[in-house]
Length: 363
Picture (cartoon, rainbow, N blue to C red):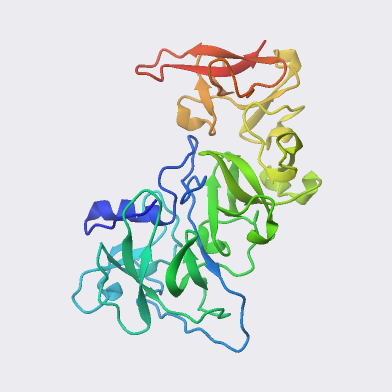
């Protein structure tokens, strides 16, 4: 979606749709990705191949493209003295994950700021919203260096900036790597952060080309069933659980039945299990066959609201203890519930149209 920046407090919230994909996901956490499944995610720019003979200038702190200490309006980030268009974007901006060291940027609306030497006016596009403009710090095409925590890029959110700029990122980061924000990831990536399904974060290229792994950063592109629905995403390839970040609960998931092959992901509510370790460990539990759950059932106990449960699940307060339950649609036409389970209406007694849900329960 394209974003409009406004010179007020609301701008700060909207602006960070720049990195997140406004709208995402994740009932249980997440962010939206610019045109893809990005739940709580922030998108990075694409980078050229390093050229050992070129040295890109590093933006100085408190200057356009450099680090900055305080979230919000910053005169040191202005396009020119007194312009009042400079902002420091950092991890404190709601619903975003700009790097914690901050990113200094003059923001325009429908017209370009008067960009100083060493910067260019970039049009930032995100589907679904009007364009906005910003003065971006220039760097050389294919440059190997841009300063600490920055990469030289010609794309942002998969869109051409109209030049090459120093933007937050980490050269060499791979799909599947842990991350705090998109500055920890390489070209055209998001950082998926979700305490349940993406513990310790996960770098991933978004809007990749399915079955074309050259569009990934070391991963493979699959039509991933994420928090906002199915969308192309680069995930970590695997053959065994040991190929994944087992200590954070990730396992090698076999998606062959969906023509996805094997890739690393965290177990979800409703997955089969034999023990809690199969579900990723604390706070996850495995409801077993003796408890009436054939083949085991990954879940989280003790929830009170929907926000206590991962995406694609809800809190069934009728259970004792309360239980995060796999969500389905009446009739289960998509075949969400696996063998041994059926899609039942669950009366929660909550006000409004979402008072009742449908969940996969033992037959």
